[in-house]
Image (cartoon, rainbow, N blue to C red; front, top):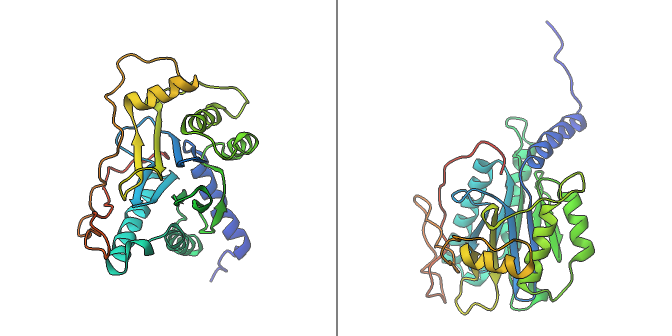
Length: 284
């Protein structure tokens, strides 16, 4: 009887981490920045159907890079967790920290399990507060650890280079246009130090805007509104034939069998809902 091949636990975990990191690095980057009125998400994403940035609950949003089918499953699970908690207790009990802990447990369990491959995803969970100092941004790598971020954060692609660029230039009190300009500049830089031109059609932009009067603070910036902001910052030449202005995102579609949080105590609004998009094999 032959002796089974032995691999030390340290080597096995290092191999799994390297596998996940390579998959994440193939995805296009996502940048999250705090600005004076909230938090802005900017992703390089030419797809109009497969979103990398999504609403989870009233003040909470989610961004991810990596394998689309994997982070979409996590997003749907997060929506279900938020709806159930908001319905059972109160909408104020749904927080980014609680959601980040749920994601950390899931990713950590999968990463340490020898029965399945690690998820090739890196997540950002953000919550907008009533004041800038109350904003929360959490980054969750593939192994389930939680990193509390402040000011700016980048994941996917050449995230290290982008993060260094942002750290040197981001400041408190930036306007939305200034934050968007900085985000696009950072995403435009390639690994060799050169710069590309990113247009509105190549970007996915959304905000958590604390100044919105409604309970739900998530808003997508699309079409003419995005082109106008980019033109103001000089990040894009005026584009003819831009899409019609769409200031707010549509309500996320409800999961199959999921229950909205419209009946949450102290709430007259409707809970965030999940949407099942088609699976995309290449990392996003």
